[in-house]
Image (cartoon, rainbow, N blue to C red; front, side, top):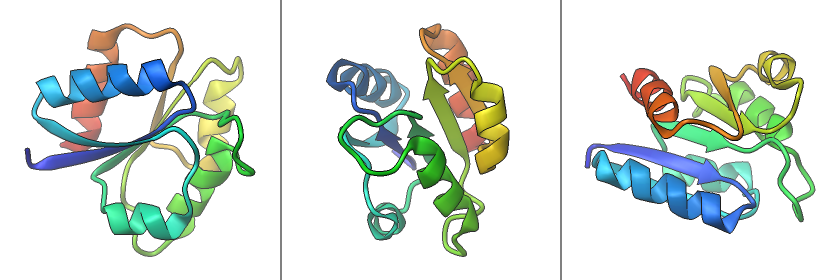
Length: 120
């Protein structure tokens, strides 16, 4: 596995799904069911961050985390893919500087197309 994706989503079943489909494509995954501090994201050294917008039980939203990633000198060039059921997902992605977004529920093939595109 030569690529690593950091996945942050509060839905345990979705984390399992992300990990399963990414690993089938030989993509290493690091999953968190809660948000994590920026220092941990830097330490994880992901090639892509897959990020939910609403993270229940965490003080910051996915939009806040995305904004921090894009403002950080160690991470600003790492792509961020927002994955959410929010109705205004396009506007949220633009506001935080996300590289792309996908609405929940999603088609797995469509998700993987976006992931592969962002990892190239």
